[in-house]
Length: 374
Ligand SMILES: Cc1ncc(COP(=O)(O)O)c(C=O)c1O
Image (tube, rainbow, N blue to C red; front, side, top):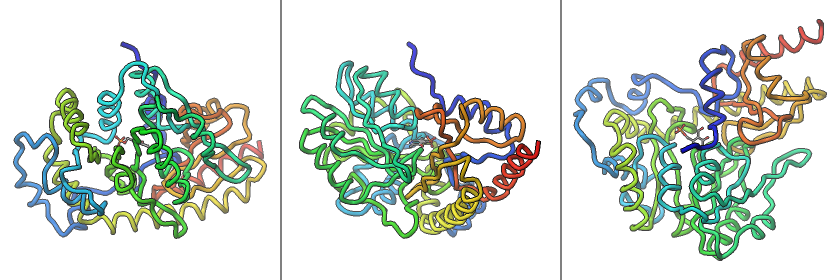
């Protein structure tokens, strides 16, 4: 059975490891296993004692306990389902919740699977489009109110948002939750970038603490910069939905890998240090980006992100698809063209989470200057 192409991943499969100056990664700076363990006050010898037998399907109780403690509120270890990858949580949720014909509303543009898997399973998706104003990206809550009906089964959102860097105000978020509640709709909230709120903004409350019928996706790939761990989890308070999700999970990964669970516990122990480090990297890189965009006002419209590690930058070229491919091949510089993440061909996604951002940006700027000279 066919499913729509996973454009982001297909693009990265070709270019990510073949292009030296990546400026569009969504993950933050990573580290070695040794460095992570050291940050958590542990050693490689601790990792070496891990037993490589099967693990608990729902996830190690200690890991689930650490996840729940971090969220706080009434969330307990019982509400956590550890996954083999964050991505798996999107697939499992859509498979578990949706039947063909069920109405789903998806915030767009969206990381491809959030839209495509829902579309594949239900075939009845309405898009709640983020609006680009002259200076920022905005939510239109009236539009959401018009899209949701009592027939709607599921609302899918992602905050902080990939690819725009949008973070709703607490009031906007409360209205989204209230609308879901009013129509008795399940709320899937992708919180993969939570913790990367910028310029002194506070994180939104996790949706799981606001609404009984929410399903939250989180993990260690983005905010903590550990995508190679492939560690993620769902938070689900509804017991029967949780059981149904775990049943689906037996058809995908059965249980999480031992080394990932062990290292995920180390990462959660070092959580505050990891997040502070990555917010500092993004903050510094955004300052370099501000200065860069001020030097090239004719080429870019800069809508600064409020949170997360990415932004969509409008670019004065006829097609960012053509431009990005040319740039990768001629200059070894990589951006993600807007259409590969469901947006217009005059935008490209930038990523600010990596330490080599300023060097790569200097490389890109040298290319731009040379082009002007040519
Ligand atoms: C919004 C969002 N959700 C989920 C994922 C999936 O995370 P992972 O690749 O670690 O499985 C990504 C990855 O880019 C993402 O951006």
